[in-house]
Length: 189
Length: 159
Image (cartoon, rainbow over all chains, first blue to last red; front, side, top):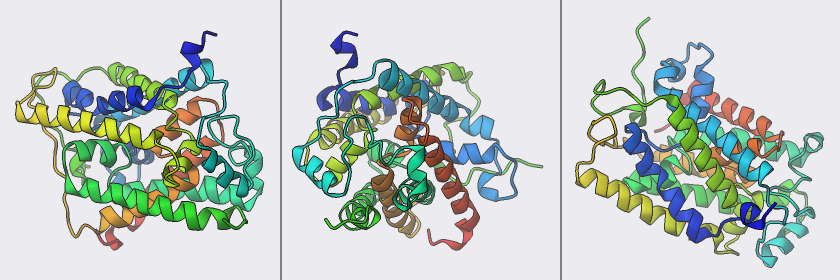
């Protein structure tokens, strides 16, 4: 496989491309670029009494679910078929910090010690996978958007709530990185 | 049963029935392109998210610092120049209702905790699943349970 197909893209190529999805989806039909609404639509597929899920998911969310399915295909192409065989080139300081937490496999997109079915037998794996997933789903629904819906779409529209949410993402994520992860992985920073 | 009005403003769309909506296939293709970009950009990598939250690398900040100006300039230009969609509707972006603002800082912070734990926000979850990391499917199911729990508690939470 030629390396130009498997090489990762630098930020100055990927960043501007990511920024183009918000205007592209507006142009295609006034769609608000965002992914987390899919979590709501997938809940709404099952008929429910809860008002939050009582809407026509096909009409409101059909396009978004198609968009989400497309992301799965894109991930398969770029992350499996044309997978980068090299480890992610993160900063040496990050590598050291993560090694201190007990993470040693840097070969893939995610640490295999944590993101394998086997890790579900460990408390840290359960907290990351089940607990982390739950908080992403709860937080994004509460905040009314995720990194794409608030961080890109809302900010692109210069909406104050989205700037506040984006700040919240970094406050929660920073605190978790420095205070919670060392506890979860059972070591000291 | 009458269809319930969408509680969230971001579901609201332009002027309604003018023109036919494009087929869902176009959104599948656009989603695929987005999935390729975020995977090749490594923003779906737990390692990159850790590097970002530790402020030890420029990569993720370079992405935000280029994606946001492009998105802001193009969306603002479309709004101010009165751009129309491919069906001829006026481009509109419904504002988010501010309320007390609690939902944005508190919900955002809760989301941030989950983002740092899983290293993945919803978009990357779909891409990671496609890249063959099966256990991410369980993260997605957990996220659905989280969203459902919000739906359950919604009337009792400060917004």
